[in-house]
Image (cartoon, rainbow over all chains, first blue to last red; front, side, top):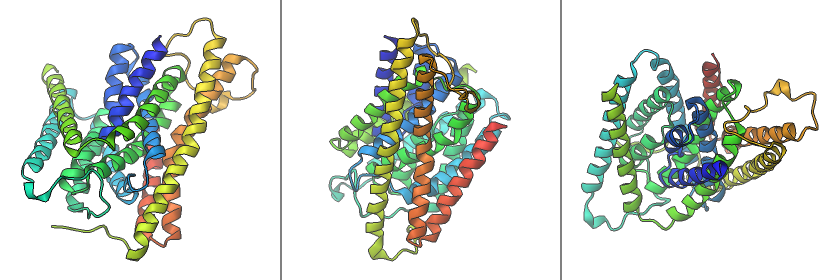
Length: 258
Length: 132
């Protein structure tokens, strides 16, 4: 029964991860520690493999023209990974509560900017499409700078940077939302791969937990891609903003409680 | 300020190149995830059936130096299969960057090739930083 529950948890994380381009680790780590009483290191190790499974599931079923922008993903991964390395170092020099409050402010800022961008769009443009082949990424300098900051947060907090990369790509760099989520799913796989072998060498990868979770995540990611093709931009954007606000509140409370 | 994606590829090749890249990434995802997951699931069932009780989190993945001598014990075989499956799945992101690098070099897209190479070097560097 525990294994079935792990697979079901993975399934939900996979669907959400694929839909929003965030890998799913942000749901899995708390779920594994709270619901299954697993040590945090085992939960993070499991989540890293699960994020790779999401990335693989999305990559395996994304139809032609609906995949991520590999060139963009590689460029942003460069700055995100650099930020993550710096963040890992910085984590040892900042207290946990200060870190949580900074993180909450960044998340609220990202949500507010995405909301502002949505509301300020002229209505005459017609219905926004999730995917389009004709787009030109803008604000490269600022985008790469801010994804470095997103990577820094991911390094400091041990979470994937997808939850910040998607709104940054969408709102700041004018990447269509569907392309941004697919690109982010490619990127989070790279970020997770950077850490997974470290957890392996530490003995924190436990196959009995990983297998049912990763299997559920993989199936969930494929379902997520299928569902995403049937959703409008408004739904995905609303879910993204809602997730950012929830995360911001959670981190703010954590910071205030110390 | 608006900048476009810098690329030295001729414009008429870009779309074809992108489609080819997407196809290759899809094939790589299938080629690594299906065998990886199959091994993981088979190993999981062997492992669960071999033991009377299974409690999570269970044993860690087999370290490379514990592979030999090989044992016929079902619990060992199960753990070996699960570990091999996880390694195959975890190698996928690195393989995808290698494939992108190969395609960019083939298409003489040096800027993107350098980016992919930088990504690989950073992955290596971050794994070394994490190990310390």
